[in-house]
Length: 113
Length: 112
Image 1: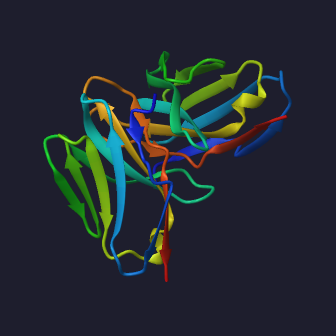
Image 2 (image 1 turned 180 degrees about the vertical axis):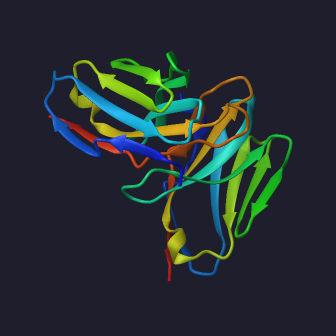
């Protein structure tokens, strides 16, 4: 299994609070991604990174920010959480952006009350 | 707008028979396609992929077929086993982009 660790695995918080999710990899892969999974929507890309300090938006980036200060860590921040951001969040990594699959972490279940 | 669609939310198959999971896409620029398998409380696991220069790729019990003219992708599992029961996602990517687009998933149940 690819060395991907997501933390925390579960979190419950209140509307309006900031939340940071962490993705840590031991594979030294260049590309890292954050997805959310919701019923009826599959997996949707929030943000991705193509190197240290290099990030770009995905299709559902509003309300989220990311940072990547080291190759191994990719942080996803909800500055002021809303109930619509209740979801399961997955981190993924890939070595290149050519024909190589992404490998996923086990997810973070986030509930915003 | 969903660029990758899996129109069957669920599928049930008897053990030993063939499972066929389908996926349609709308973007003609997609050139790399993948299938992932997902168990509850785990992340998706890569299963098999195909590039647009091929129309078939096989790996053991799993075969992916690509019909570019119909913009259709299918995954065949033969023979199906109870351990194959999971949610299957198809995904696609263009040759110029970093973004993968996922379908909504099909839940496969293999009945012993």
